[in-house]
Image (tube, rainbow, N blue to C red; front, side, top):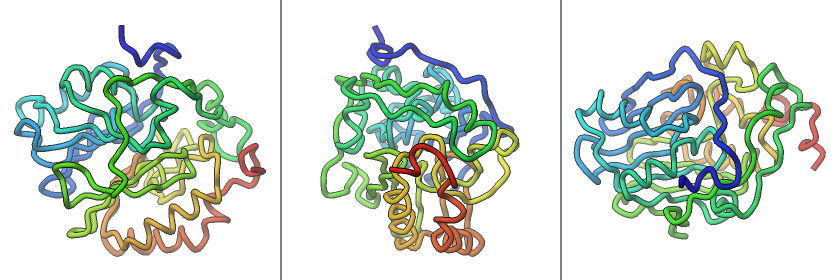
Amino acid sequence: MNNQTSTEPNTTIPMTSAHDGLVQRLTEDIFCYTDKIVNVYFVGNPGKPHEWFLVDCGISTTPDVILTALKTEFGEAHPPKMIVLTHGHFDHVGAAFDLAKHWDVSLYCHELELPFVTGGQDYPKPDPTVEGGMVAKLSGAFPHKAIDLTPFVKPFDSNGSLEGFPEWKWIHTPGHSPGQIALFREKDGALLSADAIITVKQDSLYDVLTQTEDLQGPPRYLTTDWKQAKLSTERLRDLQPEFIGPGHGLPMFGDEFKRHLEQLVQDFDRVAVPDFGKYTEE
């Protein structure tokens, strides 16, 4: 039995984007793969076993999607050293249990995210009343129940490190979920921001389908603490990243990215926080 289905049946959201199946090479050792509407990342050397790590597991509930992408790009779907879960929302953990089982590797997440991925606590329901576009209106149908990824899931080391990858640090970025994390590498300013900062207006159906580039705060319909979300955006800006690999949308680079990031921080209350919605009142 797949433990991931123990508290809620797998649900496939009939949504895709113009970049479904696209693999983009961001640096020599960072690859972005788009699974329908969400990004996963291959970091390190996927051409060799245990010399890379996977960031998130997509929205597809079959592992074949990611395994096929790895075989196509690197000749074989070699096992990573670990799988990093930036958070446990349904669109980031689609094939998590089956991939961990297939490769016999651990899944790592922040300790505050553990209740949601060990069957202990449901996420708050998405808010279809929030200000936003068609995706926001449809979000009431999105899964929010706890999943159970035991026995594979473990908490990160509290020192912010990733075992075997000393250049990378995890950064706690709550707001969108209590235990969301981003990943940062100082030597080249690489930021994998999960849903703390994204580059598409995720509540707009048209923008999601076309992947229209627009630096944004976290998705409105699933963000429950906007004060924390703002602080997380500021925390990531203060790292002075050179480029971003977001959880949703296209990667952004260089001066344009830096300018838009600073603008997002300065205008966060106006452009990111919705004017209305049940979580804006908390």
